[in-house]
Amino acid sequence: MKVDRISLLVVVLLVASPLLGAEAAKGAAVEKGFVSIFNGKDLTGWDGDPRLWSVKDGVIRGQTTRKNPARGNTFCVWRGGKLKNFILKIKFRIENGNSGIQYRSKETAKWRIGGYQAEVENKQGKVGFLYHERGRGWLVNVGDIMVIDKAGKKKVVGKVANVKELIKAGYYKPKDWNEYTIIARGNHIIQILNGFQTMELIDNDPKGRLMEGLLALQIHAGPPMVVEFRDIRLKQLPGKYGEAIRLFNGKDLDGWTLSSDKLKETWSAKDGVLANTGKPGGYIRTTKDYTSYVLHLQLRHLKKGNSGVLLRVTGPDKVWPRSIEAQGMAGSLGDIFNIGNFPMKTAKGRTRGRHTPKMHPSNEKPLGEWNRYELRLIGGDLELEVNGLVQNIATDCEVIAGKIAIQSEGAPMEYRNIVLVPVVSE
Image (cartoon, rainbow, N blue to C red; front, side, top):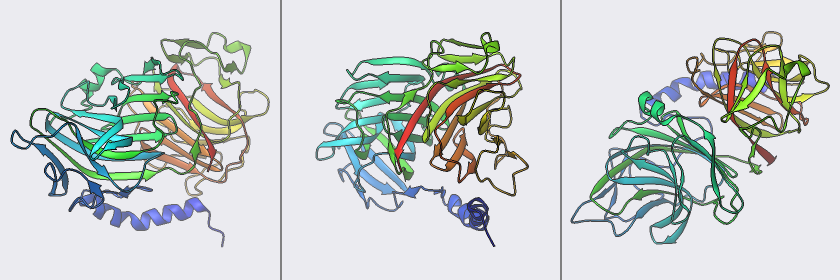
């Protein structure tokens, strides 16, 4: 009997779910591909000043006092190897003072580290920014997407969030447990705090950027402070990533082509946003072809309606070009539609004709709020992730270069920060 890979995966997950629940109850949720790198008992695998770092009740604790101060910024370094392309999830709580999570960093002396730093402090609108310790200094403010060019010049090219709205939504809980998610692929970096994206960086500076390095936790020099960390999980990402590409420049439609001249008034670009009125139906597509990549973007529905992101589009422009559709309809983000009999395999139990509904209930934001949509199409494998949750998968997708298209399909919608990270090898 032939069993497809997706059906087998579903069975495995169903069998494993009680065990996963037990682990989650222990405070160390098991997630596919992630490995816990802190045992919750001691500093095995970690290296820091024993005067300042300790473990108690499943927590790494960094503390200074007036009698026992830090002699400059000091770090507890993970000795499990260097990080290159990865997703890191880590919970922290800080009572006072300043701290940070170092990644892709270099050791300049014993317990001295320089590199990218995700900011940790009890300041709303500040916690979540990106700093370069012992390097280029302050990099990306909360709410910004930045591009650093080959000469090292920094330029804010758009917004990933409105800071006032982040604070109102409770993106950070002072003196309580918060969770960072840090994603690094090639020269593309994203930081997420409690599910809210706080910044994004495309670092094209060959002299300043860091593509590989150490992970470490910071105690900042200065007044007495206490910071704690727990539930540290790491997912190493295989393959090699090329230079990130901003498919939409935030200003105009350069690099895109309309599927029909009738759409000239449908699409517009302003203030970093790619907008469509929804009528008439059709799409806008890239002028270039892409095969394997991670496509990260934000979208929002201004009212209930339909749209979609089409992948590996081939053939002549028409209303329904041969492609894989990552559904964009309000309430249906994460659904897959097969257009033009595109060769691929989806879960048999969920697929009805061309349509494969998502695996979980909708986790979309309310109308008018931005959603993070990450479409990972690498070789024959497809994953659709909505606001941090994988909602759908497909396998054995035909590997063919094709355009990327965004549909106009009846309702006004907006897109921004459309970034493609090529996968150049697996």
